[in-house]
Length: 445
Image 1 (tube, rainbow, N blue to C red):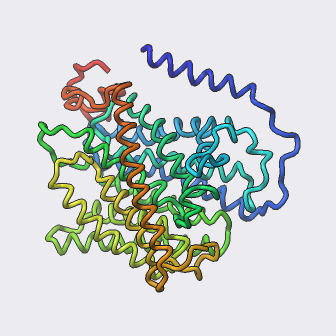
Image 2 (cartoon, one colour; image 1 turned 45 degrees about the vertical axis):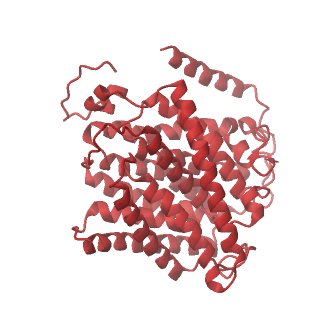
Image 3 (cartoon, helix red, strand yellow; image 1 turned 30 degrees about the horizontal axis):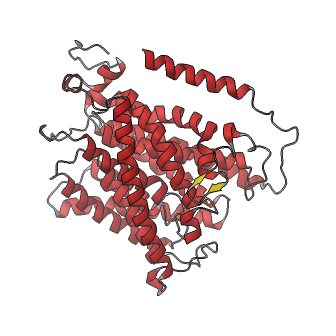
């Protein structure tokens, strides 16, 4: 109760502070704006936001029936928490004036001041770019909920959500996409977030799965509650990913179209490869397998979408599915408690995408690629910087995530009790259940 009062007071305080911020300028800068680019980026921004509800259905369908609501809510609540945090300070930390190439100055765009009256970002308003990037910031920590599913207290998840966004996501976004960022200056290519989004979520999930595992507990296989939910979630993710990747061109042109085509091709190839590989190993072709494979393909093509040819995307999707499938099989034989395979799919998939970018990127696809062609074309520099970024990012994410998990656990114990786990997080954490589900409700919410 006391902690809830503190959180409510904090939100009210932020709202009051917002009223006293400087007024919007009378004349908003419109010079250099292209209406076609603005229209496309508005649509792309909406598409990326749709991915988070898609993720909720994707994860919700794969989890135990008594944990569907809590798992889906963890994605939806990110839309609220990160949206507010991004306005207050998140955008500044990611894209404000650079401090050592690692993080942005929190005062640059604090409470979104200087955003509407800022110079145009390319051919779109800066406020539109800021909200496009917000959708990336929302889905990244939401991806990690596949590891937390069935095991984390809701209030602890909220604390982790805030800390991860501020101290892992924002620095990675700044280093990768800010013109003065460390990775950007190094020449690293990450078109739409292989490092920033997928590796950060995937390797944080790996650390969380080790931190939260209970060695005395017998690991049980999860029975998916609703495969049609998984299919629906996959469709929404695939659809939204066109905004995720093609929108990262930041204009409605040839590069956006190329990224759009590469995205679809990689996902299709990966979904088919996953099903065929399962069949070779004696499994039946499953809807769940195709869906997981398709998402892995989307993950792997994300950093490369604007730098590789469409035939190359076919290869990337296929290889990512093979590698991730093998890692999923390996993980199932360990004590890791990565409930919905976030690390094999997003951590490994994102890393494969970064490596493939270093191998297959072509300056003919994207003239903005000043680092050079990939190793496949006989040039070494790009592959070298991609590997450096890969190593630095993994170290930063794993160490940072462990510290954040430790801090969160000290503030609010993270794992639910055995009794709460038995009754399910839907009821124990939220006092809700699916109408058809009858459980012993002897636990206080």
